[in-house]
Image (cartoon, rainbow, N blue to C red):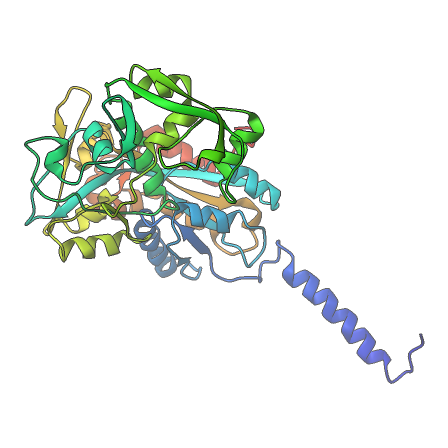
Length: 415
């Protein structure tokens, strides 16, 4: 193919455009996106939004965009790839899972920085016009689990009123609004409250255990169990042809199940009822709060910071500690760990975007600054984030996070 002199300028321009496009779409290009994009946990989002606003107001960088997608949804977006179409930071109300690290790596996201910002409690709250609950973890499990032990067998949860759980609890319908499975709050609640509660069920129980012979489409847990030839709990409503070698195995209690078959225990403990007593109310904790204010009979599950912001209208259940003392979810009790349903909060940064999208490292350091976290002498009063309900990371732990942000130190990929 030949080019006439008249066509050469077009040919040269086309090559130049290809070169410009290649440069502009490369992950390291600083002009690909001018604003930091943050996704993830609805619990961390109010803190991230406050930092973003201050960062945009006081620095030379544009105000970061903060979106609520839930912890799981945020990590899925974050791990989707490297480049301007993917977020730079994701907030999380639990640590990143090994499976999520693997997803990141499979899409080229190989350098992840983990920053722990503090702690939060998960509360079971209601309108102050309703009854205040005092509950043990065991009673929370019995109220919300899909299957519970009755007369030595696991059966579909028969409890419909709080007084069915304990006689001196309110004689009102169990109605709880909470986050969906993609939420980090749901993950932490499952682990701390549902798992902790199931482990305190002391009655003997027999379970049908088997190796799956066939699996329904999309049932990944069943497919993995079948491939590994491992035992799986057969829920009472499971199809008969899903399992082979089904047999009843007797355990002294559910804690014994956890010890011998952790995956079976998790399937039992983390399976929240689907009969209308627990209603998935979306990723927004604010939405749950608004629904509680219009329904005094309902209870909601969300992060402590939202309780703090609505303390004049909402009240929280007290939860029994190991010594059976009922503990309120206060700033001090969550920080000390006395409140049983407490968890750590994080954000994760894509190191491959640092130097590409302006201001990422500076945003990290702003989040950990005295202005946001408070001074060591009086973080309750000086810090913007403690004033909004965050129980901030302090002392040597906070300094470790600051050094991590300064050095852009990434996760150990083997952990």
